[in-house]
Length: 135
Picture 1 (cartoon, helix red, strand yellow):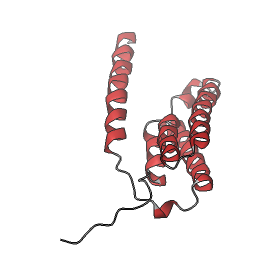
Picture 2 (cartoon, helix red, strand yellow):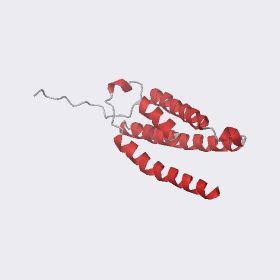
Picture 3 (tube, one colour):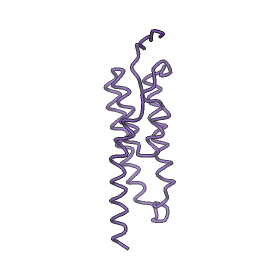
């Protein structure tokens, strides 16, 4: 058995994981993952900025979408595009704060995925239930 060398760097969520979570769930989830990366490397100020920035971005998107015509605001494309933009912004900020992320091991995504599914599946179920009541 070969000896394993411990990496001096803490594991971080990859840029791809942050973008995918931002698209599938919301930019806030991507902001939480980015904030956890920043906390792991001791950049607590950047963690706060990433989290608050993702919250403010999501609120601004919701306000903007509320002004769109109903036909356009019902499109799932808006959610994908705004999630992608949020994820790209978070990873660009992360690249600026942690310039050599490739030297860090990748953190597994199972725990945040399970948490997101436990939150979003009941929410989707409630939305479907209340929409069925309206018809």
